[in-house]
Length: 181
Image 1 (cartoon, rainbow, N blue to C red):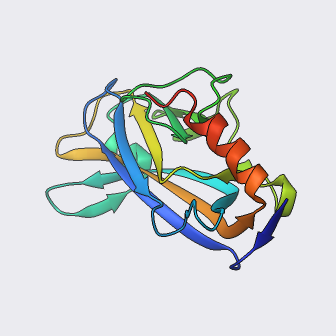
Image 2 (spheres, one colour):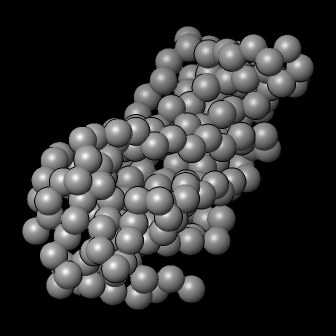
């Protein structure tokens, strides 16, 4: 199905989550990796989500508990099409990876919820193929913030550039852009 043109490399994007309960969105530009004329796409091998605290006054990075004044919860997703600043259902064709996080400030515990992350797809035909020119990261983190502190959400994607057979590239493009509104 696909022939690797590069070895694995990492792409990252970060969102600053300032207001509890608000869904934030960021984009990753894939224009340099995806080429319709050459049937070139991106093979995603794994996706990791990282939540950190950050004091915006002192520019000091904190443990997550250093940014939350109490218990907190978060949800985050990586998608192949624009979700219009919203979290989507797990059966939506646009969803690549997702996770949930619960943080207990009292005893400094972090739990992954039912939505397990990281998402590991594997190499070769096990990878998640993307032919869109952008990926979308959305995230939300509930819980009261410590003064001058925010939660920073980072997505780290391990991927490689691949050359797909023309018919495979077209099938992926139809699937990924079919509902891109």
